[in-house]
Every structure is written in structure tokens, then in C-alpha cells.
Amino acid sequence: MAASSSVGRVLTLCRRFQNVCSLSSSIGTQRCAFSLTKYQGNLNSRSTSSQLLSCSTIFMPLGQHQSVHTTISRRGLEEFFDSPENWGESTVKSGAPWTAKQLRAKSNEDLHKLWYVLLKERNMLLTLEQEAKRQRVPMPSPERLRKVERSMTRLDTAVWERETALRLLQTGQEKGRPGAWRRNMFGQVYWYRFKEYAIPWHLNKRYKRKKFFTPSFVEPHVRLRIEKYLREKARKMNRQNRRLLKLKEKLPKSLSA
Amino acid sequence: IYINIIVPIYQLGNPQLRIFRPNWFLTLVRPGKEQPPDTAQFRVPMEMTKYDVKNYLEKIYNVPVGVVRTRIQFGSNKKRNHLNQKVKKPDYKVAYVQLAQGQTFTFPDVFPEKDQTPAEGSMEEMQNKFMEDEKQRQKLDPRRGGVTEWFGL
Image (cartoon, rainbow over all chains, first blue to last red; front, side, top):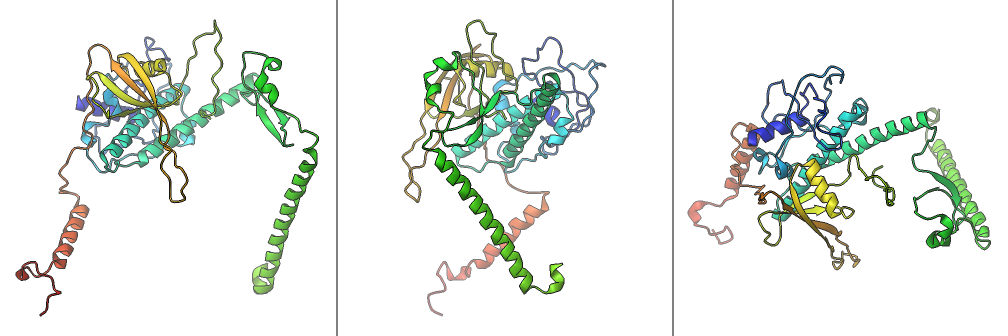
């Protein structure tokens, strides 16, 4: 059981897996099955193989299905913990986080699967962190958690970029969520993002209390605010110029060029 | 990007809302009080409901879930820092998940005692040896029988 669990970990996250078996038709994309891959390299022990190494693997194009059938891991709640060899260690080796550049090269299916892999890893690390706090023991290698978090945010950005590109091509809309430039009651203009309601705005009491205009008694203060901002900017520029002049006086002429 | 997402409102007749790439993370915790053998205790983000937790565990972890009960644990606001300001410990939601199909779950011991003898790793061994030598040098003359140097001669 431990061996299979370690194999499972290695397979999913190790750099050396060469083929990704595409999801079989029986498993819908709804269900997260991060499918284990056939591991053709030499099986290293868990300590040497790094978990989060960025994979520059060769993915077989989906047209040529290799008849690789792997079982979904059936470990259940054991997946909330590391493999038992790592229990009690003071440090656990892990590789570098995924970079946005590497993630942009992956297909959507791979990103989907990777998200769940990272999700499970993050859950495991969170349980480990909490248990370490409970036992009043230092958590082994907490940088893993930060690496996973960064990988996940980068994955998000990659997917968001793809979505915006697709949206621009199909509809010409730059933003996914509609909005408008509005002036609030302090005289400031900002991008107001629309929220979805079940009723129209003229029946919405709380929305009507929110003022999207500047009352007349606030308008003079807007000008004062602009003046203050300009004054600060001018002072900053003057300060910089005076500093440069002073330095030019002090330092020898050859340096100033 | 996933943080300020607003979920579309649901009205009668709408299709079932599906979430790709959920942004929710569960933490398995050791129960403070004694729990029945088939119960697992999770710390769950506040936005999750019982059905969410059930679906999450069933779909992602393939765990047969029976019932889920949740409660919100209030994090204390009583402690004060060196500036006498109140410090809030964050609130969190706890989910008690009962496993179906008669499965049991005990929280394992994740930090067992291990022998720390670094045999091959020469660096650690050298460091340990050096520390022991230093300590030996600091010790007093054993012939004085535990008496410090402060007493004359």
C-alpha cells in the first residue's frame, strides 16, 4: 500500500513521466481524475525524485491514443498525508514551482489535471502544517506550500489569458465582467463593476441609496484635491532637481557627464 | 483572479452550477474531542456548504461520504498585542464528515520518533562530532567531582 502510494505520488508529479493518458470516455471531465501515467523511467525512491519539478515532458498528441490504461488512485483519505516514509523527517526535498511560461505551453486538459494535482498537494501540506502546530513541532520544509500556491496562481493567470484571448476573438469584449466608469460621491471617477441582481435597479432600495454623482457641496473640494496633488507633484520634481544641482556642484566635473 | 469571483445568481429552472478548478482547500485536523470511529474532522473555507464538502470529497478524493455536519468556530478577539490593540484570530468552519460503507478513519501519527544517526551524510556527522567535542571541552575537571572553579585553589 505504501509502495503503491509512493508510486502514485511519483507518477503524478515527477518530471520523468512521458505519456499522459488522456481521460477515458467513462470518466467525465467533471470528475477530477488525475490519471496516473505509465512510468517508464527507472523508479527512484521518493526522497530522490522531486515532487514539484516543472515537467517539460513530451505529451503525445491526442490523436494517437496510446493504449495506456491506468487506474484511478483509490487511497481516499490517505491522500491528505504524505507517503509514510516522509513522516518524521525534518526536511523533504521538492523541486521548483511551475513558471507561467511553462504553464502556457500546456493544453487545457493538462492544466485542468494539474490544478487538481496541485490542489491535493496543497491540502496535504495544509493538514501537515496544522498537525505540526498541534504537536508543537516544526513543519518539514514549509516552502513547499508557498511553491504550490505560486504555481496555482500562475496557472490561474495562464487560463485567464487564454480566456481573454478567446473572448476578444469571438466577441470583441475586453473584460469578462461588464462595468462602467462612474463618479462616486467624493468626486472620484472609478471603474464600477456590475453585479448580477434578480430585480431591476429601480426596485433595488440599497442600490438607490448609493450615489453615483457628486453633490454640489462636494464639488469645491474636488478642485482642492486636484490642487493638492499638483502641488505635491511640483514639490517632488523641485526636490529632485535641487538635489541633482547640489550633487553636480559637489562632485567633480568629470563625473557629471 | 479567483478571489473576487462572483457566483452567478440562481433562479428556479437554471441549470446546475458547476465549478471548474475549485479554489477551496480542506485541512484534515486531529479532533480535539473524542469522535466516533467513522468521523473525520475538516477545516473548511467559510463559503463551502455541506453539499459542497460532500461533492468535493466524493469527486476529487473518491471518498464515500455519508453525512456532513458543519459549524463555524469563532476565533477569539480577546488577546491584545504590545500596543494594547485587540488581535483577532480568524474564524473558520469545521466540517464533521461521516464516512459511508462502514469505513473507519483514525488520525495517524505523522511525526513519529526517528533515529537521527547520520551515517552516510558526513556533513551532519562532522557537525555533531564537533559539537560534542566543544561540550566536552567546556566541562570541568571530573576529578573535582562537580564542584565549580569558584571555590578557591
